[in-house]
Image 1 (tube, rainbow, N blue to C red):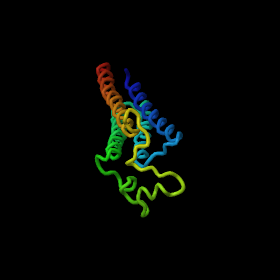
Image 2: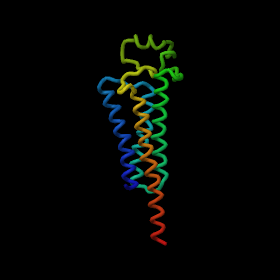
Image 3: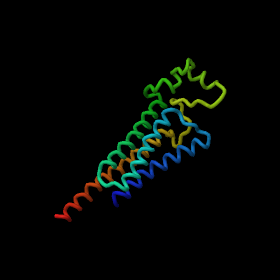
Image 4: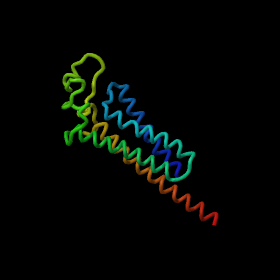
Length: 163
């Protein structure tokens, strides 16, 4: 396994998760605010992955791991909001007010459907989309970390060859 292969798997995993998110959106599952927050670190990981294939060193894989850990953490936090383990942002939960309306009032408005962060819109094997995002994102952290380790190994090999 090479560093670039690990980077491509990790960045490709983020691209696949983004494709899945957009597919669900196309199928009629619009994202809530916290779902959208989970997408930005995936975008960052994809860009970092593209750069890391061209630029050697450990810094970019470390940043990729941080991006994947960030989206995974948001996903697990979102899961806790859905399961009422803790409070979510008042702007997107049933307990909060947005422009003077509570969650029920927002849902009654004609127009685009407002998705609340504390409502599970889809689940598989009793796990919601944010939970799956968290699980897969932390798997991707492992690939980023492997790329970091392999970056160090290739640096040591290069320095021993020149000695």
